[in-house]
Each structure stands twice: as C-alpha cells, then as structure tokens.
Length: 245
Image (tube, rainbow, N blue to C red; front, top):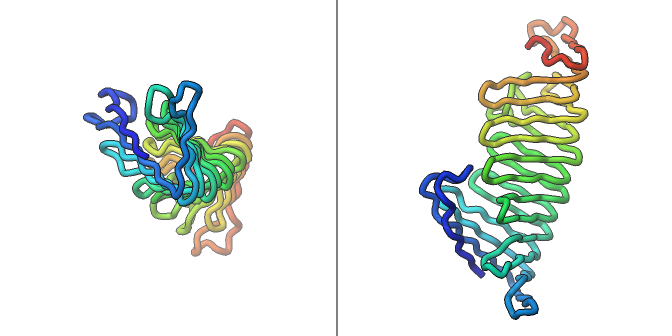
C-alpha cells in the first residue's frame, strides 16, 4: 500500500526549501481493509513482517519494521495515524530506535516510542519507557525514568574523563538541531570516577558546556599526577549553577 502526499508549502518550519511531497509505503504478509458506513476505507490492518518506508525530499529515508500494525485512513485520503506493535525497529540515516510500540501522527509530524524505548545516534543513546520525537523541530522528549550514554568523542557537554558519560533523570528534553539536552528530576551524571548530582543538568553540544541547577553535589577526582590527593567535592545551594568548572 502506498500514499503520496502533496508538497509542504515553502517556509514551513523544519522543512527544507523546495521540499518535495512525501511518499509513504506499508507492506506486510497480510493486509486487511476495514470500511466505514459509507463504504469508504477507514483502517488498514497489517499482520506479519510489517515494514514501512517514508521518503521526504531532502531527508534520509525513514524505515520501520514490526510484527503488526494499523493505519487510520481519513475520508480526505492518505493516512492520519500509524500504530506499530511488537519488536518495532526504526532507522533514519545514522539515527535508529526500537520499542514495543510506536505511533506516528501525520498532522503533528510526531513519533512516539513506548515500552522499553531506545533511541540512538552517532553521539548518544537514550533509554526510557516513552520517547517522543517532533520531526519538524528536532525536539525529543523522554519520560518515566531516563538513562542516556554520551559517547566520549562525540557527546554533548564537557568531558570529565576519557570514557563515555552516563546520565539518568526522571525526564529529558532535548533538541537534536540545537545540540541541547536538559535532564530534570533526580539528575545524576557519572563519567569514570567523576559524579555530579542535581535537580537539573543541562548539556550543550556546541560549547561543550555543562550546567547544573538545584542541590548540586559533585565529586571530581584529581588527575593521575595528583592521585594521592583527596577528590575535589562540590556542594552548592539549591539555586547555584556550577562548581567553578
């Protein structure tokens, strides 16, 4: 089953100039169509080896695979929402994701991964019960207990040790285009023997900076040449932002 969408008007946020219309394809071992009272198709049910492909001018092809799925078909044509279930795998360029369930909403250009959700790109990997992507703006929202790994050579923020950095929090709000990630609620970052805890930790890719806010506590061990000295410990007031890094 294949749908072709009209081109998005020039100047639309997040859409490249001269963008072509999108093409969406859905395949499976079995396709079943449901019809409404007026005899118009309203839902497409896909079962077994489901795969989707979405091509938008100027962007890498987006692909997804799952065990089953459905597509809501509005009377105006095309599709309005797709749901994929069972071992969902996503790929777009160097970005990938996986979850037990995925929902794509065409009108809002959003993708929701739910159930052991994982998102990965060249710089980082994030795991959470729910991860939401807003394709037009690059916004990424994760909630329900988040854990990220920032790879040592390409990650966001300052480097505290020559190993990948891990960070956990209740929630994460990031933007892949701006290179910013904000972790809030029991935020904790650790890299090697260095540890920082705060109400919120912000990582900035371009400036390779890290900001901590609220009940900050940090432990940064001395370098090898200073190994006999005690680790440097920082405890700040609730509204303080840094440990003087």
